[in-house]
Length: 361
Ligand SMILES: *Cc1c(COP(=O)(O)O)cnc(C)c1O
Image (cartoon, rainbow, N blue to C red):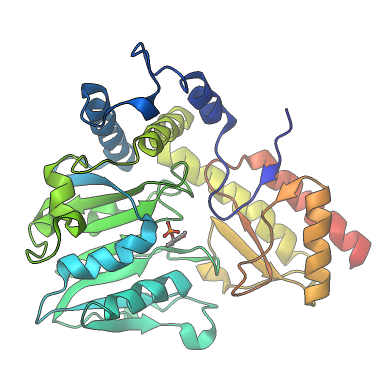
């Protein structure tokens, strides 16, 4: 079997072990006589699957009581709309930290719902660094402060969280949840679409503190309300059962590897292998993000011109690497080294960077 080194930004690499487990259980789930995909979402098995998956996630995050885990469809992008729908009020605006294009998308979506304000922005710097933590000032009339903890497209990551005081902090952690330890208790809510660190596409997980859940707007459709999902154990309507099953396999894998702490160590090592090759290239490769704000999940860099970058992508594909072209909106190169990408893949990519420079530098 041939397995490429998959550096895709999402959907992204999954551990071979997880894929094999999924294959083994594809036709029969437990001793049920059917696939999990054929199973009623009203069955005891599916109910148990959802409870166990949410408990496992909270265990990995080190969160005890007071939080609800919700499994939802619609991707992270749907959360961009649901957050203002649920938590903006007639006299309280949503506040947004603009640190990259997904953060801006969340903000623009919120503006279609109501009053959304910018708490800090580095758009005028082309997102090449993050707003300073002290510059972030949600107004007193904030319904919440929204932060994108890792900017997947640009390759930046908040290493320190802002202090939102009594204002609920809501985090889009789509591209770094379970990738590093962070004080999750600072958040009233965080969410992640699965297709980066948590499994295949199809499900988005939202972790919400119960005091925020109580504030969900009443006058919105039930299907858009977080409290509906909480009250029904995410089984109000037919959920993406198979994607949740895959997430459970991925969480079990994460636990077997040693949990978040081990993931963080590996991710630091992986990122260093790539940043070192970039920084030692004497300008042949140029990192796109201020050093102190660099992401450990998405490593971005540029080369002299488009032509050389195209050549790099072509050569990388011939050498067994996938997904290294930068996002179409920013260009350049990007290596997304999520949890499931092995250290060895980054060792080899680091060596490839050096070798490519030797040939074309
Ligand atoms: C990938 C990503 C999104 C978009 O997720 P969808 O599931 O495609 O809606 C949003 N935010 C961040 C930080 C992401 O990495």
